[in-house]
Amino acid sequence: MEKKSKTKQLPLYIQVSELLNREIAAGHWLPGDRLPIESELAATLGVAIGTLRKALKKLEEDDLLERRQGSGNYIKRAPGGQAIYQFFHLEMLSGGGVPTADTLSVTLDDDAFVLRQLNLPADGKLWCVKRARYLNRELVAMEQIWFNHRHAPQLKPKDLHESLYLHYRDSFSFWISRVEDEIDCSTAPDWVTTPLLLAPNAMLPKVHRRSWSNEGVIEEFSFTWFDPAKCRYFARWH
Image (cartoon, rainbow, N blue to C red; front, side):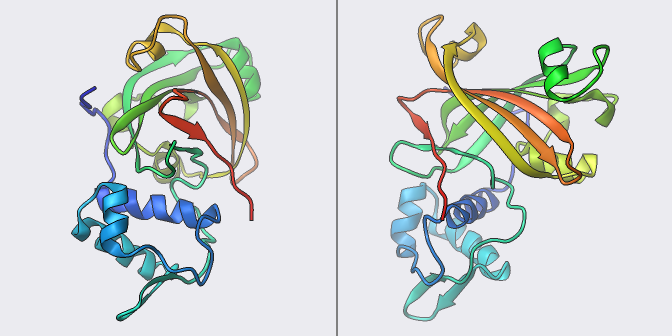
């Protein structure tokens, strides 16, 4: 499926640095570990050496990485800040994957169930965002995301960044500090199965997520349907 994005895209080297940041935060690499050699890591991520080196330079500037001449790149410490993809929990079946997203639609909604999840009054208004989610440029999941209409009186797909958490921080003056996920399986709607090239009414894993802001308010509720033949949900603790 060719990706025709309406969404503000992160530069590729930022996407890669955020992916590595997320992998370090998840304990995939620990302080003191040496990263794979640059040519191997670039090939694994499917990016040019130059792009990878810009990503590594950013991690070094963020004091997460130490580059030792003639030896390689070593993890200096685990991230302590708010990485853009800190709470992103999908990865390729082989591990990792550079995440991107494309906004398909932005509409007004008044879904009673979602209003309750966000602790909003029954007559409240919501923005509903539908997105396609990619890993290494392969379509793996579809997302439906809601947040309070009061944050933006007008909103179009081109207004949104591919990282909504970054958009919240830059445009809505809050950031996501914690999330709660529930996972089940359910029949996916046609707008999910069609782009994923799956049979109508296919049964798919579905992530229900509540996201809290730095002020302790539930600011976002979302559903993510993902294709288990292409990716998996993961969580690591260390």
